[in-house]
Amino acid sequence: MGARLEQVLASIGTVTATSRRELDLADPHSLRQHVREARPDVVVNAAAYTGVDKAETETGLATAVNAVAPGVLAEEAKRMGALLVHYSTDYVFSGEASAPYKEDDATAPLNAYGRTKLEGEKRIRASGCRHLILRTSWVYDTRGRNFLVTILKRARAGERLRVVGDQQGVPNWSAMIARVTAACLARGGEGLFHLSAAGTTSWHGFAREALACAGVAAAVEEISSAEYPTQARRPRYSVLDSGKLERSFGCRFDDWREDLRAALL
Picture (spheres, rainbow, N blue to C red):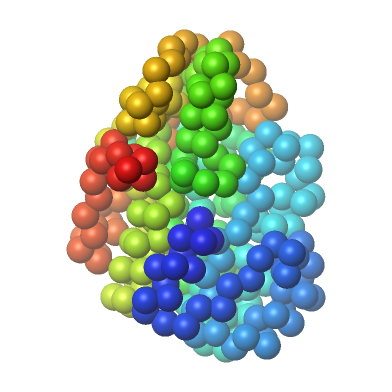
């Protein structure tokens, strides 16, 4: 998502971007030094430890990147009066709801990844810095490492596709997230908001729609979570309600299928 943000945010200001090689988020000293040298008006943290299953055993690293680093960025933002933009996840919720989650609903993450991301949110708020925390879900793009790229690659290779159908959520295109972020910044957005396309689907539904949009003929077998055991538990329902963000900034969200079609054009 970093590349999408760099491209979109360049239209509203001067962007100084860093790569994973240039900046180690697990090194607080290096992180502080880099921010102090850059002296930004806005700090956008698009990086995260996203290995949901690996986080169960690499909890220390996940905590360093997802919790400690955002806290350090928040402290530095507070010190220089900058705004911190940070992305969080639907995985801060338990998945026991039956209606889209709102920002003030109780959090109860099921896995280490969700817990570290929630801790990052808490450290940002505790710092007292100006912040814009955007929770989103199931982020994809046509490049990089994500579900969309993987499913299309496997389908084109003729591999058997078996995809979980009992976890409900919303796929979100990184380009859309970047555009909404820019709109929020242009309007002086601060606070905690949910950012998600409209509609609901399962991973199986996402896979089938992706193949259809890409014109790839391949069968997708629907399976249960029990048939696809993972190290980390996933919420069965993690749809986010974007109503607060729509009302606050006049953003309009298309159905996730429309964004997917646009991404695959």
